[in-house]
Image (cartoon, rainbow over all chains, first blue to last red; front, top):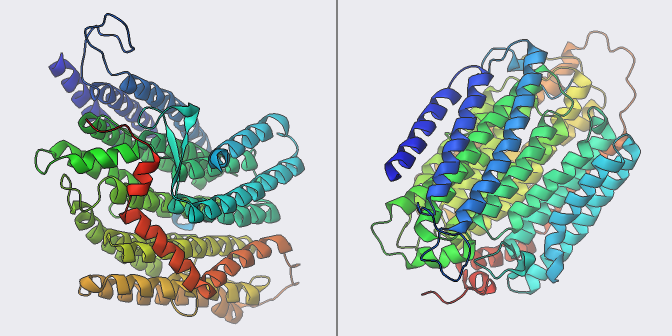
Length: 117
Length: 503
């Protein structure tokens, strides 16, 4: 169980890091999504891996799982969901405006990237 | 005072939503309510600062859950000071945006602006690390909207990069939080401070990793080398007033470093030791160098100011990295100063750009309208930014040099040489913009009508803040010294949380 979880986090992080180093926005967004999955699992595991235990107080519980990390993961999922939506929309906007979906910083055209219209 | 602590978070949240829902089509109403909201927040921030100066740190329990279980907001001198700084800056930036019509170039400027203020005040007031993450996200998501306000190719491209970079930062933040939580079992800052102090030396590799990951996250926010790449492109492409507001966003990173690494992982904690300062100091000095070289080589005015902002963050982090009460007081003074100076320069860059048409510094163009006035303002702004007398940048740098007397061989030359480089960069830029312009004027043409007064009022207002900071340097410094002393004696801060006895 621990091995499965740990290698899952590791694999997804590695794949995510590989993808966010790509040059186009679509793989980068996928990489960010993978990273957020990895971190969700990691957050979950930071409360220790426990199977079949209740998260809230009951009269006849042998032990408990940590409820706080579950709340943290929930918050993180909501936030990363919202952020993914934002970056997809912005990437789409940038693609429609510029006609390409490159995300690297240097293409020579930002030299006069002033603040005016 | 109890419920006032949450007002800087709740008021903009309600008002921002109201503006989106009820006034989406009426710019005048948006302006009135947005401005009224900022003025009200400024009043609340003043009241909070007064309370924080008179009383010991105060806790606000959300939902009345006791400290380590529920989320707390903490009001102490540093938090109150940062909230006040944000609101003062926000007021002038908002006036500028209204005066120049920037807020009419896209939709929802004022709502996003208020959400940004909500995120900033929340980040300063929170006493919980996970809550800090949440407020970082709130201020970031508002900043994404503000950053691409007005649209345009370059802005959207830079916006996507900015968002992607910050999403990676958020993921790192979560990794850091999970690592720290797995060691300590808590994320309440005061509780963390108590628990980390009890951890013995050795066998704390996981905690050290967590502390370093957290430092990386704050370094991304604060544009510390080697994580500063996002800043020049973002700030240069953002609308002028938004870039000016972002002057306080980098300071959020500096604030978080001061808070976390004096309270939770102070140099005296046996588990982590002085490693933070050891890492931070070289990075800060390199940041300072890169910023100053960038100022010297920038091709456009907006990029020049962005690199000056990086250099100011380098100076700030240099002072923070020393982790002594004296150096922290100097850092706080420089933080106040550099926020205003950066904002002034971004607003001026926007004013010049809107008249000149192009921001390039490679060629001289005919003089702009009100050239003399703008030149004088740019001169004052450059003096402030480079840290020359008589403005407060000089006092700030002097205080930092004085605090760094133990590191005379490393800190002093870097700060002094970079100041010289920045003076050179600003002088070259200023002469291209305003001086050579007169020589290149072939046909003066009809004098364009002078622009609206409100943008200039905003710039002069910020300049007045700088002058006030210079004149009142003594009293301000005394307050900051008390603030810094509080940071290094966090017992009242921890006690305010009324934590249960440790087992």
